[in-house]
Amino acid sequence: MTIVWGKQKDKWNEADQREQGETSAAEGGQSVSPGISGALKYLASEAGPGMSIEGEAAGTSVSKHVYVTLTGLPLTMEFEWPFRRSTAGADFWFLHATVRLEGAQGLQAPVAVNMSATLREVFSSLEPKETQGPIINAVRKEVDRRQLEFVRSGKLVPLQFSSRHYDFNRKQWAFGKATEETIRTFLERKIYWQTKLVGGDVWVGDDIEAQYLQTTTDHLAQLANQMAGEGLVKLERRWATALPALMARAEEFEAAMQAAVGELERKHAFERG
Image (cartoon, rainbow, N blue to C red; front, side, top):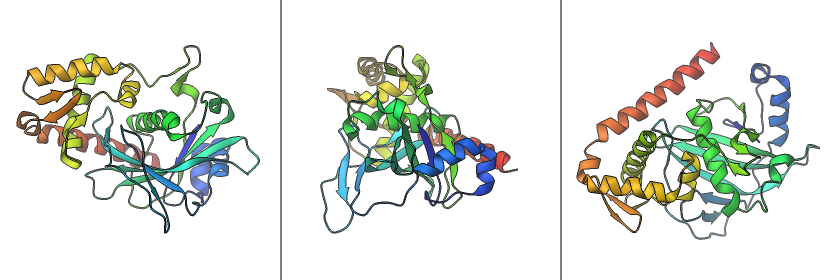
């Protein structure tokens, strides 16, 4: 797969193509097309995508779900389903999405996810229930690697998203094995940001989160239970309610976010020269 992002996903900056290499830029450019009227927009959610239809028709929707990165950035994502097959001669499928950095005054990254024919064979279908999880985690992993730049308006840049995210030998997605300490910190940040930005109880038995951390939902529940024992959350049937002791650490969580944003900005500023 390849992910490209920018203000306009159907235009390319020639200087950026030279920076990324002519081959990768051309591949990314072929996949991009204008939005389709009547496309289905889904907010990523642990309970399944919430759907609304552009135009006159309107469907049902669910509250947005906050996906925290390992570096502490709270993201929300909106997908324009379905995947569409390229008509530019290359054999791949593409999906448009918008990744928003919450709490950052409008910073976002419009992206185009390009799926190759090789990776297409991994899926039995391209329905959201099967593809959404790996796509969310692949986007998060690229944010962890500081490959995705969040802007209010800006240039379009290609980002390679390849089969390195998939273990063909084991036939499973592989986003990197997180340590016990990393998972614990991740859960604290996840519950904090979901509570602050959305409110309500937070589901800690999310398969997408377990896939991202390369662990199990049972392990996530065990760590959440430890947090409950420490008075940070109230836990009931894998639904966590943030308690004042956790929310009182707002300065810590938001400082981690600002540090991660700073690292992103410095990295991309350096690349721009």
